[in-house]
Structures are given as structure tokens and as C-alpha cells.
Length: 366
Image 1 (cartoon, rainbow, N blue to C red):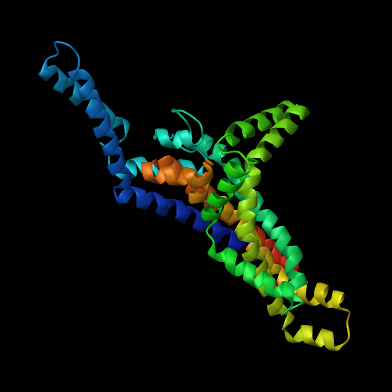
Image 2: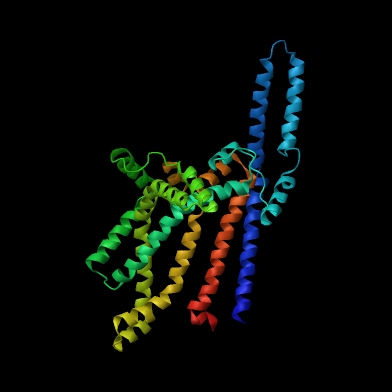
């Protein structure tokens, strides 16, 4: 079987997995009655408020109030689709989502996370929150990865040295520290004690908007000022996340390199008297590259889901906050749209890995 056919088959399976993930999400929120319960709670609350408003009107007849409340309730039931089974509302939404036609946001809280007001499209809400998560979490993870790729080969060839022991201790400590806990400490120290970081980080919404507007209009000065403003809001969250992620990344890359360095072909290369740089480049780094790249790509793809608690600590309305608000408020269009986007990113990352394996590992081509 040719390599191209293998890649096409795996791509087909990944696309099938994407479709199944979206359908399962729709089935869970629809068949379990979760969305209906949330919608009925909203209808009951709006009906209660409407009844209370009518009752305060002077000289109002009680039968008139009940009639108007009944009409209003029926209108809300039809608006939220509660007069039909769940699949009449959810399954068309799944098909539209797969066609990149996301539905409308139903909950005020979901739109508020994106800094919008109803009516709003789920796609617009997701596109508004995605850059914030990339600036805060994806950039931090990328910085941690780059530092780890520089340090890990150094400590991997010095097992038992002071640097190696320090790396192991640092990885153990940071692996046990929650990001949100360190975030609280960093905000207390740098924002409130030293005053070198903002005390409120939600201003990143306006900063990102100004930077993108300046970029689209070709205003270089405005773009530089907007970038500096974004950096002012983002440097503390980025540093916090890098401190926590760096230890595990160094340790994991170090472990991958050590596993390869103990293979027989590496021992044979050393026995032949090859220079250390040649052994490192040809016999260790090249075979270790596929698992390292796998961890890097999947790690970066996973950052787009956001950090719910850490975003709450920094008051940073990203993808994690959006997902949490969509689930707790029962907004089906946003839940399905987020699941689709995040699963699609994972599928694309896996497909890129399949192609890279063919390039990097001759055994795959054979």
C-alpha cells in the first residue's frame, strides 16, 4: 500500500471521528434533556417577570393577566423550540455546524464573555475569544516548549549532574503546582505589591480590538501601540503559565532523549568513536523527533481549549471561560460549535503528524 493511500485512509478516519464527536455532543445535550431543562428554567423566569410586571399595572383584571401570561408563555415555548422533540432542534444545528454555519447564541452570559450583546452568532463569539486564548495560553506553551527543546538535550547528556538534578526537582515542584494558584500569588506580588502589572486584565479585549483594527487599516504606529498594550496585559499570565509548564516539558523531552540514547545503535555509534555532536544529531535527535513533535503539536492544539480556572483568576475571557459559560447556561449552538472547532484543530494536528512521520521516519515509508 502506498504512503499516499495510507495518509488518505487515516485522514478519512479522522474526519469520521470529527463527525462522531459532534453528533455525540449533540446527543448528550439533547437526548438527556439538559438543554430543555435550561430552556424551561429561562422560560419560567421570563414568565414570572412578565406576570409581575403586568400585576403592577393599575386597574388590571386578573383574568386579563392570566391570558396575556399564557400567550407570552406559548410564544417563548415556540421561540425556544420546546414544543418539538429535541432532535428537531439539535440535529439541524449539527448539520449546519459541520457546514461551518454556526447557529445563534441564546444566552446573554455567553455573548457577554465575548464582549457582545444579543443577537450574536456562535461563530462570532468563538472568533472573539480564540485570539485571547492564543495570546495567553498558546504563546506561553510555545515559549515553554522552545526553552525545553534547548535545555533538555543539555541535561539529557549529563545525567546525575547538578543541572540534571535541578531539572528533576523543578519539574516535580511545578508539576504539583496548579497554574491558578501560582496566578493568585503572581497577581498579589506584581499587581498589588509591586504595581508593575495591571490589576484588571479584562482590558485585553479592547487592546486586541485596537491592535487588529490598526493592522487591517495599515496603521503601523497604531499597531505598535496596540501590541504594546496587549503585551502589558498578557506578560504576567504568560510568565505564570511558562513557569508551571516549563518543568514538565523539560522533563518529558529529556525522558524521550534518554530512551533513545540507551538504544543499541547509539551504543554502537559511540563505540565506533563518532563525535558526540554527530551521535546527538544523527542517532539520538532524529529518532526522538517523531515523539517530540507529537507532544508539541498535540500540546499546542490542546491549549485552544483554554484554562477555565486560570482565566477566571486573571478575569481573562478566553475559550475556557466561554466553554464553561456555554455549558452552565445551556447554549447548544455554542457548545456544539466549540466542540467542532476544538476537535477540528485536533484532527488537523493529527493529520499533520501523519505527514511528518513519513518525512521524518524512514520506517513509515517502508
